[in-house]
Image (cartoon, rainbow, N blue to C red; front, side, top):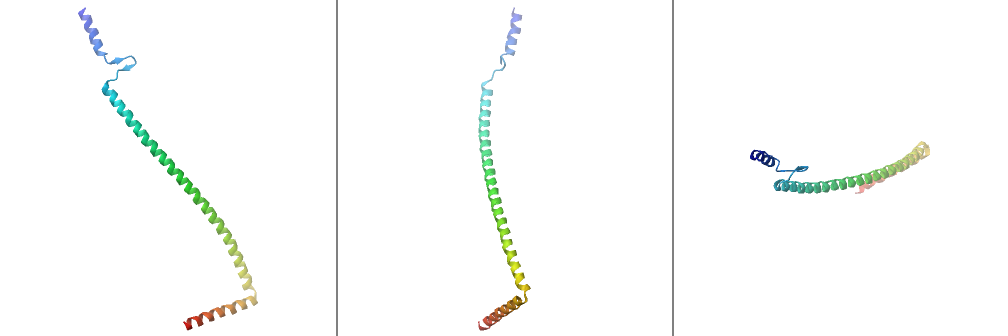
Length: 124
């Protein structure tokens, strides 16, 4: 019977660390597991903070791009309106220069301006 007990004892010694459904966790494995869980939680918190920061930065960039687009649209509209005013002014100048009497008037005014500038520089 002793020979039978020896295999049972050796079998019990062989499977001593096994429970139903898996291996019994030792205190060393449990402490490493808890440390890993704590490290994972800290890392997850850090990742969450980084993701939140990146989300805020991308939101700020989006707002900045939208404001610049609105400003560029306003500038484009202002340029279009000033182009219209300038082309109207140029059309009026063309009409003035096409008439001979207006051309004489313009040359008379230009000669007075030149004469005034010459006198101004000579008296200075």
